[in-house]
Image (cartoon, rainbow, N blue to C red):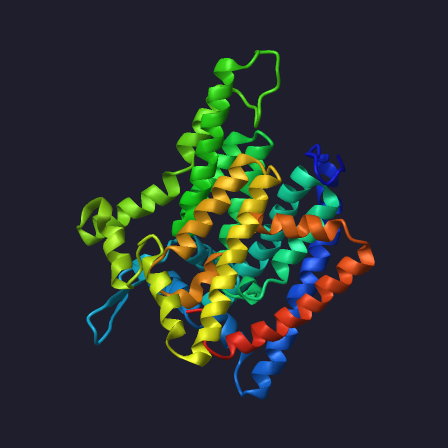
Length: 393
């Protein structure tokens, strides 16, 4: 077996930043390229790249929460009610904190938080991939995440980068037996996005597996994700507190009890239907020839995601990563609305990228650099085009 196929010992904490430096520098370069492309494309179209990054779509909703608090809503002509209670509070809390201690506006504070969080997310992805497959694979995993077609979202005042950072470091903490840290970070992830339940599920499954192993394993044998039982139990208890606390608060605020948050999401026509609405959306594309090409593209995209997940299983990824990626993917693909957002919603599912990272890591450095460089340019151009057009709703 090669060093890419066997778990790697955790590097000394003193050299962690130096070990991750190539990945972080590469990540910064890719994101800088994307921002330059966005600035040039926006200027050519008479638009502000700054506004596109900080004051459109969800970024504007988060800014309003930071500035005005909860309670703002928009009633549409068709009767739908878009309430800002749909947006989890950690990002606007951080925006408010940064705006309070700096001269930055809430919008710029959100951009700063997202920028720092994107670097933290890249480092967390490196830490996970490095721990499982080695440093070279870790660097490639970060760069593959950076050059995703919707990678420009990582540079927006959105919550994806913050969530991915918390999720990645929580998973790393589980893999290295730091259960209290894992539980705390999982709780914070649950305060960031509804998909925080994926982190909780990964931590719980890992805990159940370790508890079950305790009952049959020789006490002298090493424990997977080892730690004293009380630490694992406390991590399990901490993990869901963030998401549960916010959902229960929304239920109290709306007067509709524990299911009140589902009513808020229903006002946005968001829900979980097992993928039925998405399947109909794809099927409708085949009613005419030009749109049929988009339908074929969507089917190929979903097939690629399924293939990546199956490959993750075959390559023996640690169970917490498989559970996390599986739940994120299921929630993204089986949501009943905002089909154009699905690529963005899949952005935190970084374990799906590890098979691609392993393949790149096995190439010569010059070849992998050429591949990643070409994809980075294409991603930058696409991100600029996308954000100047329909963009992420």
